[in-house]
Amino acid sequence: MKGFFEKMQEAQRKTEEQQARFSTEMDTLRKERQAADAVMSLAIGAAGQKTEALSAKTESLIAGMAELGEGQVRAEQVEALGKAGAAAMQLAASAGAEVARSIAAFTGHYPAWIADGGTEGLNHIAEYNGTAYICINPIQRLAHWTPDAATNNYCPYPSADRDGVYPYVSGMLVWGGMKVRGGDGEIYRCTLTEGTYKLVNEPKDAASIFEIDLPFS
Image (tube, rainbow, N blue to C red; front, side, top):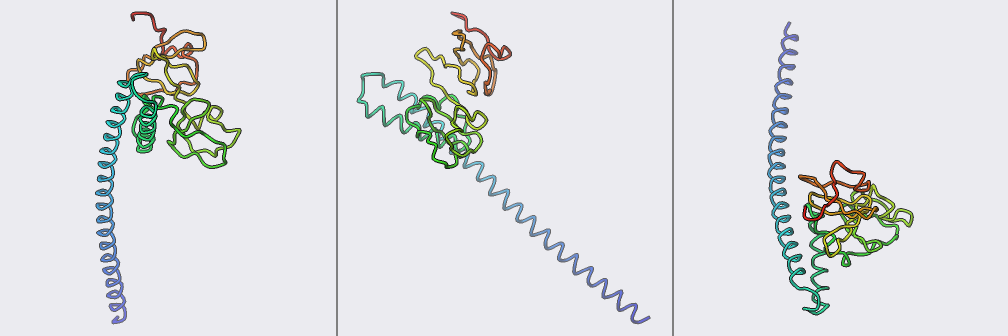
């Protein structure tokens, strides 16, 4: 009988020890979770501030380019602004900022896409055949996977003409009010009310988000 009680006491002691260890582990996990949440909150706040600062810098650069005008400043000043703008676009895109409307403004200043066998990183901006492309899905830079061919991995940003009309390129991002010239020569206006859309088909075949842009409309 004595041995039975000793076994019961030993089992109870082990149970209490396990409960104590479990309680300690739970406290540790709670503290780690709280610390992780605090770090994440700081990171999100910092990213938000960085994105806002980059967006403000980008808007300032774009405004500066618009004010300069042709023939009013030396070519090197325009070149410097273009490079600074392209750098700001890359930083903003890497930070996850919404920069779709501004990327094409700095075409001519992004690094050229080269089939060197390296990996094109997510949100990296490069130029190919005069068009800026952003990588939306990392891919190896191979000769048969050029940005215009690997449409699931790149998103093109064609430049607008002097009238603010963009040429249609399959896979381009469009937004509300954007004017796109289709392959049929017609100019279409995007009717999106918010966000952006990756346009794969011609505007004439996307009637749910495009309408012909009538004069004085």
